Image (cartoon, rainbow, N blue to C red):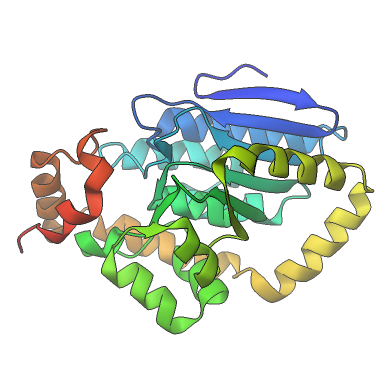
Length: 272
């Protein structure tokens, strides 16, 4: 498998997928295109059972969507789901026969958080992982399923805290809130995830399918709920208030690597 934004290595039935979309792993059309192709090809290959996602950039796992290319990345998602929606792309990953694991170092905000929430399991480096669901800072709802996933994982109060505050959360807090499975020391994270992935891959694929189907029947929101959130984001991201706040953020360095190291502070200083 050869991609522009992903580096893929096979180890038996496990694909180790490293995200590499400089300068800061924005979720734009190129990365969405590659994720669509990866998922489609892996699902068609009976020899693949587990996907492990990590980042080549220690500072950013997936930063968030590229807000200058919303139409373009949504169109790329439609090539897998039939609809221009990364929410439905992410839900497809959750419902896939493949077992997906996110190995998180660096920042996962917005759709980056929603991507790891779509994975079946999430493990993060205690020292470096940073989580945020910051769409409310622009007057928006998360468009990729976070409202569905976070509420189920955290409960109502914590989900509202996370989404309405648009703050950054460290790995220990994310673990306590249920955002991730575990926070682990960075030095042991990779070995732990690789060992778990290989163990899961040794078991029959039929069991993976049945377990995921029954767990998803309880814990995964419906296609209609994901579609509704995606539609609300798509409608409101073009509104004048949202566009004004995005312009103000861009003027302060939004979507630049250095400025987003302290994104929560910047968002808190945006004027009305």
